[in-house]
Image (cartoon, rainbow, N blue to C red; front, side, top):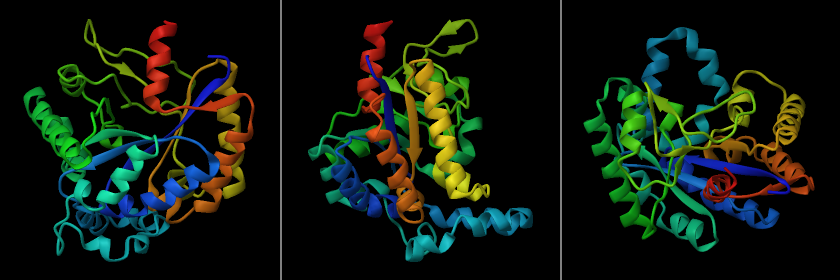
Length: 280
């Protein structure tokens, strides 16, 4: 790998995310870059997240900063509307694969995964992953070889469960310091599926923390420089409902800056995993 590989990972958590995917695909076509799309399967229960803020007044400000009205009628999913994420926009799934992007699995039932994974045993997790694979394969007619746990929630049971499937890699960790793709351990055992970690918070997360847009560009550049100095893959991630729905100009500018920097080359996570295995 002569240049430093950079990847953009797109998390599709809801029907709103997948509805905005075509706008993101248009941007990728304009920039001539390929991305990796991790799609949640099963019911979109976005509305249930609202109750977390009702129960915790201290989170009101964070909730307002997240611009909840960006979801419009999709905010009712899970209460008044029953929608399966992988079935919400078939044309978007078709475009993802037809235009050369990668499609991966982002779990099954995002809301339940985020709230229940710490208490799930390995058998339950395997069943959830298997159900998700079946749903996404049926909806996309694509062989799914990459996985990403919703919310970067990781347990030993999850890492053991992942080994039971034919994933070429997984992306379940977010690291603030440069780290190479790695094989995690559970106790004394080294797992068999390579982990390709995300390198920093998303633009939407940084904005929710109050970081100004100019500062975000500085942080992305500084992080990219640090990963480049180690010749390690630099992985950004985003959600269409946030980065496209709220901060598309900033998001576009960040991607364009990286794309125009001769030190970096955009790859999918699958390509990074494949090259890394050859390298090591």
